[in-house]
Length: 321
Image (cartoon, rainbow, N blue to C red):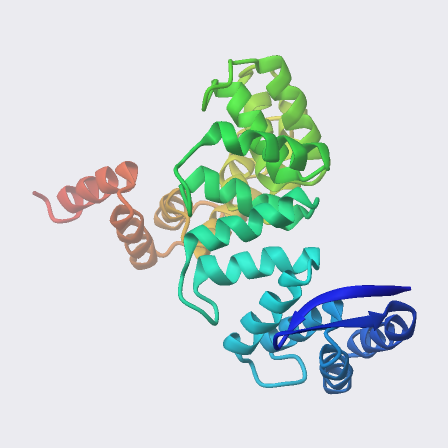
């Protein structure tokens, strides 16, 4: 297939897709084998022929430092050329460059324009870019109504975070959407099934408290455990409480202590305070008053009111004041 391509150095040219695609596939195989230098050589050679996918891949190589020294300015140039030639994945990378100042000055309006171009072509990452620009007023005025169609498109495409965002908006009646808790729970369930950790955590707490759903402690425990395993820091404390109090599961204070300790190591204020209690009392862990004091102080520095109260109590108690 012969296709006209746009500008390069003030001239127009053509490339033969059937001829160049096999070479691009070979470069991809090199990357899969971690032979980045060999892949870079192919991308570079194809980019000289103004082949848009190769320009984009060359930009990625410069951006990541794969097979060549990192060079943001070269990455930006490649993304810009590929975008000008209409290569869809390049639009969102060009938008990122303009938004974050990668290889160029920050230019929010150009960032929004590049994201919008990619989003209209169906690129998922570019849709996220448009959403963020509308939601934070980047390159345009803040306008959630303008962001909503893109959020919906992302949700329809099965993007968990977009589904969660819609669920929150419906649950609390945010940003111009009418409150619809039935619709919200349906979306929460969908996002949780797709593996979105925050959706699993939030839904787990809803089932624990019977908020918008019928209380179900076993389902709450399972959701919180999934969220924790998927790396959600916010799920650690409610999961520990489930073990500590026997919410949907048999009581297991040793497991609760382990989770509070993990939360403390992650600098979660509630975890610092709870694990300090265990250490101070020697409850299911070896007693360590000095470490308990340290964790109380660290939690108090994060404005944890319970830790602040506890430090005041300990100060009066231990110093007989």
